[in-house]
Image (cartoon, rainbow, N blue to C red; front, side, top):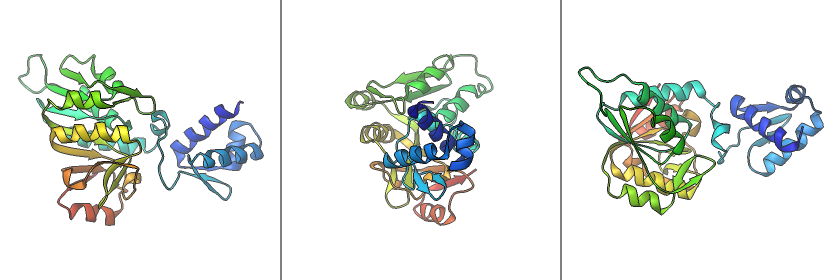
Length: 261
């Protein structure tokens, strides 16, 4: 197996389990423990994981892995978060959604929600997104009106970024924006790894009357490179039941509603 193929498999295992054991992984991939150790050392050099005695764990600072590496991590929690966030959005709303694994689940929940009683076809929701994967999934839903920002696609996240995003969003008013982020810190705000994504996501937040941040517990209390918005701009944080209590209390003390699902 080529080294890059092994690295991909190692990152997928790490995304799924949160840690890697050298001996078990070597047996699973059919190669020597020495090879796995060298691979882990290389991935650690690239800041994609943190080496431990006998293996590796998810890095203490989360890095910008491609979206497909993130899908398996905390999948059950993300689905619960998505259902709870979607339940906050009334039919007929205009909703901004950025890219990410959790926001993609929110979009799916909105798409499959039954039409309200008395509705006789037509649009029941407008979704504005800079994520081309979300637009692709929702475009086939006749009751959802899709507005896609312009911009340059980032292959890591499928998000459109750049000045074209702002040129579209500057003329729009949204009822809600649902933001997926890489880090939520009570004092430092919601942030992401890439400054161009942060700019696009900030524009989505500024258009909305109410900002809902969706983030699993592994992202709470962390820092990331580029600020999306201050915590004062967030109305609701939806996370999972493993959220650190001290972080939840500090966020709640700032007047932000926190749903742990």
